[in-house]
Image 1 (cartoon, rainbow, N blue to C red):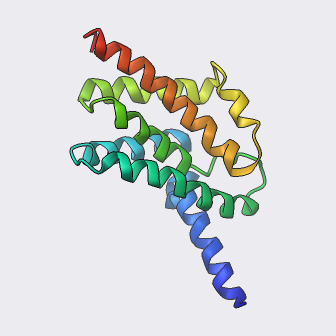
Image 2: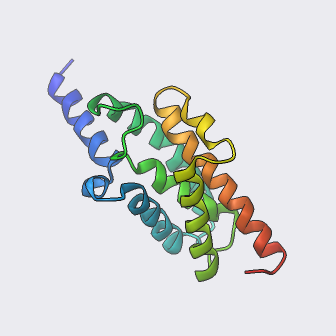
Length: 155
């Protein structure tokens, strides 16, 4: 096997998992969630948005899994691809408006940062599974909160 191919693939996975330089900025998770919000802004008007976001979420597991050996911690803060896809997941169910985007973003970041309501349990799962699922669960909680606010016409 050509080892340079494997090395280049790993470098590519590290680059993708950190969303280029954004993973190295202060508050990287917030930057990642903002990119996810931007994806939702441009994508939700298309019928295929849910398919792309779910596919990107599943695909991100492989990218994160390949990148993790190049970082020192179990869930490195530089890896923000999980925040990108999970924040975008909120708007698979919730309609994207300025209000839902702002509240969804804030509630998602609240659950992601505090690890409240069981989010911390998902973080204990090994490897890319734990890295990705804690954020997906935080997105699910945020989605539920925003959905209820929209259903009761509070947003």
